[in-house]
Structures are given as structure tokens and as C-alpha cells.
Length: 482
Image (cartoon, rainbow, N blue to C red; front, side, top):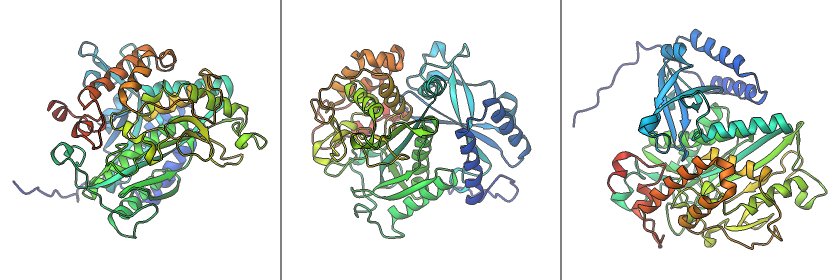
């Protein structure tokens, strides 16, 4: 095998910024997003910046498919400046988007979702921006759930004055070696990099080095970190950051996973967000904390209410529990996710709410006027974050209520296998209203196709197929090995 040729960088004048400079730029952009600066103003500012900053060579445009898989295209900066309003791509190459006969789609840049990234992790001379997907007619593409979430959040702000806020606690595993998930069908095992436990990792060991590096990158990208630590299972991690408006929060989930994977690769390891990659230890969740503000006040809070949340919040919980089975597939998106809904490992599979019982689908954490919130614990870390947050907020605000006699006692349980979840999803009238019939059908078909390639019964070991055909691992080569 030929030795890779090292290319000199002496002649290149590409943008590289210190982590302090990056944090200042990203926090300023984040504040503009919070302040709802007009899109036209942001577009003019960003285009002027790109025009003037000659050290930027390319703009990385990010969008997500129906299953939540993140896609990235690098556009030459000079080309993007001329063609930013007509960025086309082949939708038929994106799983679950369009048929070949109607393949052309366009990317509409969301200039509010603009990020400066560390050059040592993402390469020099690049900036990142998220995009909405537009169909041939110029309308929002129905399969772009980010666009649907953005529209819903804007409607709630315009009609009711609501600001929808979310923060997600995303757990993952760090495994030895590159491409550990893609090679699982060859090895049938994952190797830990650390066998410590909750909060335990020595400074400088592989897990701590990974966590520290990810935290530094997040901080530079304006995440406003809160805490980070090893989780309960060996080689498991969690890196927490602050609340954000719902679309920004979903974007940050995508960036969080991208950063983790990129840092792990740089260290010769694999960051995995499979919900239950190893049997016998705790799985990974994506606990989703949500609240609603109006006129700057948290309207979930009520110091005199049960658990110090008010009627509005309890109705929100009632609707989520009422539709728990309907939306389960959106929150638990893979065959492997149903291994996590195992009561022996703090599984949040009981359709009830509790302040203390971590087996509840919904928990009400201790809070105050600023932090009062509802925590949806049943979410897997591999779910489409835009679909999760749209399902949680739209169900909590507009779903049916009062089908449960006691919100604190489990009368039903979430499905323990993907087939039952698919059936609930396909037949639910609420899901049709939630996502549209076309998205409901396409998404269920995608999940059915993956499930049909895996053993019907989960059994007691993780099967190669449930990793091989996992939507976050998917590629043509592995899929065609079936």
C-alpha cells in the first residue's frame, strides 16, 4: 500500500481562529437568533462577511433526511455567493426523500443557523450553515421535518406568543477503533475504551480526553456548556449544554453528534449513538427537557401547583401520555432502541409521569421559575431530533387529553418491539395530523424495511443486522449485503 503523501500548507491562507474568537462569533450569532433578527438582515450580513473574508474557501451546508441522518455539502465560496438562492441537489439519492423521476430539490440557507467551527477539527477555511429543503415549486419540501418544526414554532410565536424551548441530554458510547459500527457485522462486538463508571474517569485517560475535547469544541461553537461526565455504563458519556429555542436546540443535537464523531475519529475511536449497543449495561437515552415561555415567563411554572408546575404543564403532560404509543416510533426510531426499553436498566417505558420514578416516560424534575420543565425520558439518541421535538411540542400543545384516569400511574406501557411501534404509528389519526399522511407512510416504510432485515425477536445479544441496517450506519455497501 503506498505511503500517503503529506501536502504542504505553507502557501494556503485559510481562516483559522482561536477557540476564544470562535466562541465570541458563535455567541453573537446565537444572540441574533434569540432576538429573531429578520432573515433578510442576517442574509445581507452573512453574504457581506463571506465576500470580505478572503480566507474562507468553502461553506458547508447541512440538512437532515427523514430519519434524521445529517448530510453535508461543501460549496465553493465564490460559487455560493453567486448561487446561494439556487442550490440544487438530487433528492432521489437521499433515502426517504424523492423518487428518481422527481429528484430535483433545493437548499434554502437558514442564515440564522450559521456557525464558525474549529479548524483543527473541521479543517481550515470553512464555515457551517443549516438549510431548509425546498421542492421544485419553491414550497417547503414535505419530507424536511426541520422545516416543519421551524414553521410550527413560528406559528406558535405569532399566534400565542409562545417561545418553545428545549435542552437534550444525549448519551453515547466511545468504542475502540475506527468504524466500529460499520465493522460490527465482522466482529460482533464493541470494545470499551474505559471500564470506569458514573462520574469516574481519570484525567488523561481515553474517555476523559474525548469528553474534554468535545466540550472544548462545543464551547467554541457557542453551546454554553453546563456539565460533562462519564455515564453509568463503561465507556459511556454525556456532555450537557444549555436550553435553546426549539429549532436551534435540534440543530445543536445534530452538531453535538457530528462533533462527537469527528473528535472520536481524530482519536482513532468511534462515538456511537446506538441506544443499546451492549447487553447487560445501561443503554443510551436522549432525555428531552422542554418548556414554554410567554412574554419572557416560563408558563409551566406554578409554585402552588403539584410538583410546582401548573395546569398548562399538566395538560401538556396529559396529551403526551395519551399519545405515548402513537409517537413512540418517532422517539424510538430503530430496532435497537427497543432493547433500551428494558425495565431492568432504568427503562422509561411506563406511560405515566413522576417526579422520582425514572421508569416513567415523563419525569418532572425539581425546578424553579426559570427551570421548571417536563422531561421526556423515553427518547433514543438515534431519533431524528426535529421529529422528536415536533412530536413532543405539537402533541403537548394540540393533542387529545383526558384519556388517562391517573397521570401518575401506569395503565399502559410503551411497545417493547419496533413492529408494534410501527403499527401504532401507521394507524394513528394523530400521527397523520402531526406529520402529514405522506411523511407518516414514508417514515413507517423506512422503519419497516430496516426491521425486516433484522431478526424479528430481539433475543439476548445484539445482532449484527440491527447495527448493519441502522439508519445512522446505513450506506449502500452494507445495505446491499442483505
